Image (spheres, one colour):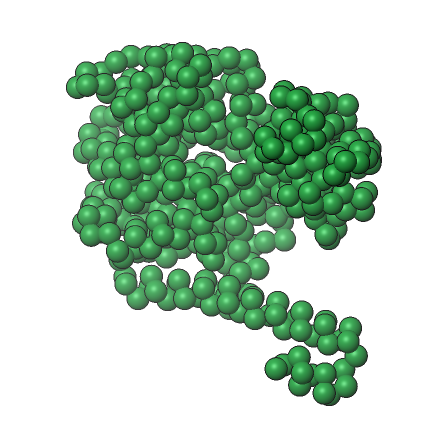
Length: 449
């Protein structure tokens, strides 16, 4: 209707297209803005959560001698929204547990103390449980992939983590020394807006103007750090490239409804070879109390890239068993980084804006690609700069890459991303050989910062 009315006014087709595009963009922006402002009004009305006020939360926790639960919730990101809804108002058992905590909701990382909040930034929901003096009891939350987060976190699992935190709090400060390893040393940048690529932001959200555009999202922190290293050194450290490894990288599948409990063990993996069994409740790892999958990821994040060990205490059939998790050289490369929001940054840097996935068995057979050789199907080709270099080179959705820079052994999207970032020099032209139907072609795509 709007299109017809504007056309009747005699607007040229390009001007009409531009106007409608701007109108659609404005309506979308208003919707996002409304979500952010609505969230603020909703929580302020309940009075049971401090909203973007960590200082008040810590002061109250000290006065009441209660632990403090801080939730970082990216608004209006939709991942983990069900978990967030249950945390707020639905789950009755969780509501009862929350009465034992001072609760703080933080919806933007502007001004966030990165020495206190150290976590996997590729997510839209992360929880931290503190003592009033800043000692961290534990973390909760993990990847926010739309199709995969339910494999790792749940309302029931959050409840178990909160119960474990209350037990730690009841024994505090006698156990304070054992909790010191849950926070590392001084970060490279004190707060997110100190990161060069985020310098345009201020330390607070702008609730008087465009709140959405003033917000530093969690994933922007990790992306900013990676961009900084890429520009300064031409490479990204493996601890940042493969940050916060998922327990699957060491062969451990944890039950999302329990407190760091092994649901399955991948045969032949580091976890399996180290003696972990189904049903093991990981009580501690590397000397740290473990409340959730996020705590396991924190420990793995600090294991050396070249391999190492981490002592584990597990509860098994009513007994505590001591194990040693042994990790081989380059164990981090087993991690899958393709699900991450920050992987789009890598795709722009190394692949010219392409998203890939392994070809199916049927596709491999049709193309004549044998097992153990690359066959990565192009799922998406960026259309706009700086994500359009692959498109300009001639790549199309549906093409299947069989060789990248002379390599045919990069079998996963994650493998080719890591190789393109840390092996190929910034700005170098890379030959990409691919199949399009029965035809084989080769193009050159330059990497970028």
